Image (tube, rainbow, N blue to C red):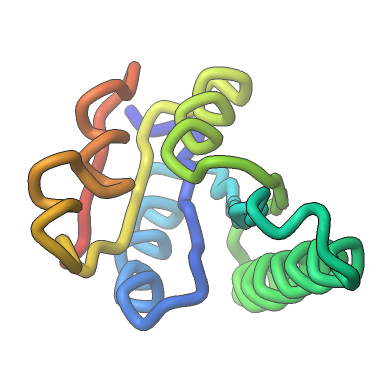
Length: 139
């Protein structure tokens, strides 16, 4: 049923809570696990000194998060690969899900952090709203 699962890993404690679900989906469903980290580029600082270093550090951190998690999964016998992309997280998650033809998107959630997020939506709400496949949210 779920041949390819996309997990958007944001390096938060909420993301870590998804590990048992990923392992279960891989073991029971035989799913390939696609681990994605999206870093948001702060465009408002693009003209400042050190901006290129900031982008490089965000990208390097994303690669470290993904590589560590993929290594953990593959060491434990799971079929996993990783991707790091930049952009607006919900949009990138949705685009990647379509490009990779995933059958399930898995997200850890923290809930809205502000009234603005509650009214306008956070990443998980936007992914839920526009995904082409089922979305599993782990609180």
